[in-house]
Length: 69
Image 1 (cartoon, rainbow, N blue to C red):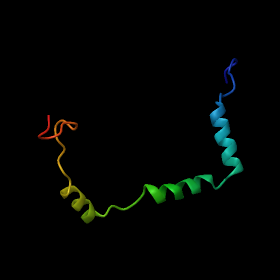
Image 2: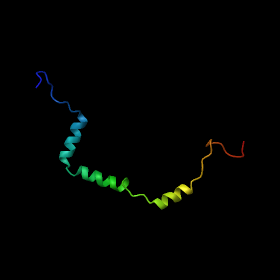
Image 3: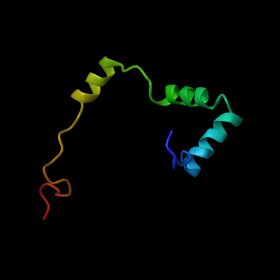
């Protein structure tokens, strides 16, 4: 053990998050449920291929209108 060792520093944000987790122990489970709703979805490969085949190629200069000056 060091003679001049300082106590471990914890930022205000870390302290807030730890306090929040102790007050709401189900917080992480609710976060996972929310993530499952929005992000962890299975991909429909057939629909994805349809989207890719229907894609229109972009012009080299997007704001240029064809045929008008």
